[in-house]
Each structure stands twice: as C-alpha cells, then as structure tokens.
Amino acid sequence: MKSIKAIFVKQAKDMLKNPIALLPFLIFPVVALFMTEFVAKANEDIPGDMFVTMMAGIFAGFGLLQSASAAISEDIQQRSLRFLVLAGVKPHEYLLGIGGFLLLAGIIVSAAFGLIGGFTGMDFVKFFVVMATGSFASITLGTTIGMLSKNQQAAAGLTMPVAIIFGFTPMVAQFNETIERFTWVFYTRQINEVVNDFSAGFAKPLLVIASNIVVFTVLFILAYRKKGLKG
Image (cartoon, rainbow, N blue to C red; front, side):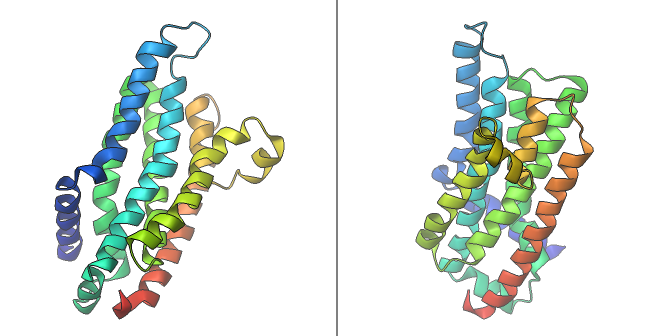
C-alpha cells in the first residue's frame, strides 16, 4: 500500500508541474461546453448533449490513453522504472499508483461532462459509471503501450494509431455496418452505446469493458515483467 501511495503522489506531482500533461483533462470538457452552449443550444436540430457525448468518448479513448502511455514512457526514459523494480515494486502496485491518479483525474472530468450535458438521476449514474470504467480500461491499455516503448518519442508514435482506432472508431461505426459488427468488443464502442442511449441495456457494456480491463491488465503485467531491470 505504501508503494502505491508513493507512486500515486509522484505521478500527481509530475503531472501538476507539467501544464502540457494536463491539457487532455481540460481541452475536451472545455470544447464540449463551448459547442454545447454556442452551437447545440442555438440549433434545435442538434441534440443538446451531442457534443458532450462525443467529446467524452474521445477523451476516454484518445486523451486518457495518450496520457497513460506518456506517464509510463517518461519513467522508462528517466530510469525511474528500473529503480522501482529494484525496490521490489510489484506490477499491480505500479499500475494502481500510476493509474490511480489518472483515474481520479478522469473521474473528475467525467463528472464535469455529466454536468455540462445536464444529465440527472439514473442517466447521470449510468454515464458516470461507464465513463469511469471506460477510463480505467483506457489507462490500462495506455500504460501497456508505454511499458512496451523504449522512450517517450517511441511511445507517442505507437500510441497515436491505437488511440485513433479506439477513440474514433465508435463514431465511424454509427455510419458503417461492417465496422459496427466487428468493433463491439472495443470498450470505447460500449461507452458510446451507453452515453448515446441511456435506455439501452447496461450490463452487457459493463461486462465488455471489464473484459477489456482484464485483458489489458494481463498484458501490462507481462510487459512489466519482461521490461524488468531494462526499464
């Protein structure tokens, strides 16, 4: 528990002293607020929550994934990972420490999206829960990519295409039946399904997202052990 807390605090300090690292947590809700107030509310043909759900999905599948990858690759580049491994930090401790702060930030942003969208009652609960679980899935995937990268530049190059696929495929799937048929296993697709239709079933999306988390977590642990003292 001490290791998790120490890594959590370290990650918090690293991000708070780097304004660029905080941009994904600010720009997406700000864009959602701006587009909602000045575009959606000014046009009766546009659903009032359209830009909120759009930006929320991209944040979870694109912004968070990049932030998580960058956090891990920074530790690798600065040789911090090697020190932590030597200190006996377990894979799950490192993941919970790094991912814990990112998840906390993601939860705060998710709540902000919900407020901007004007969601209330069970709609807000469903939105918040699916965003929180989806955020953790994105964090585990991003940390895995970061762990497999040699440095920050390599991580950025590897993360971008993955983030584009997970972040934007759900929107494309709405207009393409073939993509829709084969992307139901993506956690971002399930986020999109729930936030665009709160009356739809809730259990299946959460199960799919949880399955994504399990797969990504296993991959992270394997990558952590493989990296070992090389990090």
